[in-house]
Length: 375
Ligand SMILES: NC(=O)c1ccc[n+]([C@@H]2O[C@H](COP(=O)([O-])OP(=O)(O)OC[C@H]3O[C@@H](n4cnc5c(N)ncnc54)[C@H](OP(=O)(O)O)[C@@H]3O)[C@@H](O)[C@H]2O)c1
Image 1 (tube, protein in one colour):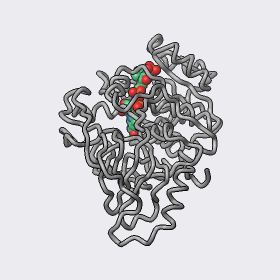
Image 2 (image 1 turned 90 degrees about the vertical axis):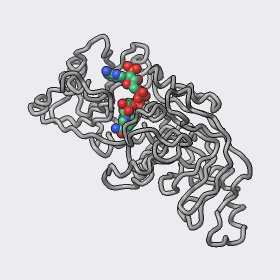
Image 3 (image 1 turned 135 degrees about the vertical axis):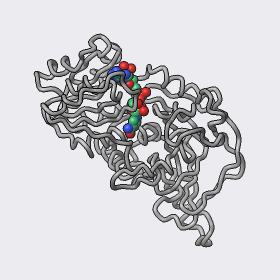
Image 4 (image 1 turned 60 degrees about the vertical axis):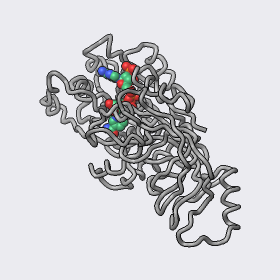
């Protein structure tokens, strides 16, 4: 395999090369005739109201790509989207919306005029379909894969070609299906905001999707890593995966001090705040002087607001982020290929049982990501 193409996709492209030139409004590639199975949101009352239905396989229009889905990934926000609780936009989504923001598969066909993405390539998407590069804008919610436009939980999905990234050969579909929500968020925090270096001590809270990527990406950058968890078993696993320091936040509610003690009095110079305002006081206590704290978790409001005065003595930087751009997904894929990184995947669930993925992530047991095997 070369140039990001599988052997199979190279054959498809070779066959495509011999084909006659297309009419202007033709699709490039072959759209299978027949039906596909898709999950759709349905009533959005509980995970049980997600529906598995059949639809005609769609034809891509200009700017679109039809993808045969291999894997889809689930992230924390998908729970809120399935239950009408995710706040942007307010209210229910169309019952027919296909959920899940993360996935990977093969491009089968593209709409007229598409030059960048070709049939046969292996791809993943960014979930902000309009955020190609540059600074964040809340307008990105207008085209949010799995939230305001169709997502990945289907045998075939139609996505804007501009949000797709071609997979390097060494990144498999399963790992690529964990990047649009979790992987790119950790990448954005570490490389775009914190500019992580090998002399940093990175604290990443919890053992969920974002934190597991925080661990592997910070280690790949040569930094020391501190992980917190409610479970000693998960902390043991974190050490196996390379964490240098582990702290049980349930056993010690004042865990910020413990982080400082276990890092030789220095504290963490980069913090991935994967929980939210409720843990910010402890994160500030765990911080080194001049630390960069990246706000990622969107958990509930705390009963008492965090003591922001704590920021001044240490000159802390606080910056919130919203996942990442297509350009960041490309950079993450290049880093994964260069360092031969693998996602930490806790569980793989079959397509027909996809509801189970929602229950698993709600119950909070996995260390790392849960993925759905589609094909
Ligand atoms: N801003 C963004 O761009 C962005 C992007 C992705 C996700 N998010 C948000 O970030 C948060 C994490 O997302 P995720 O997908 O990684 O979730 P997840 O896979 O469901 O993981 C959640 C983890 O949080 C940990 N946790 C819960 N309470 C904690 C506490 N008090 N201290 C430390 N850890 C605690 C748990 O770890 P243990 O089980 O080990 O205790 C759990 O595994 C969610 O709020 C999500 O909505 C935001």
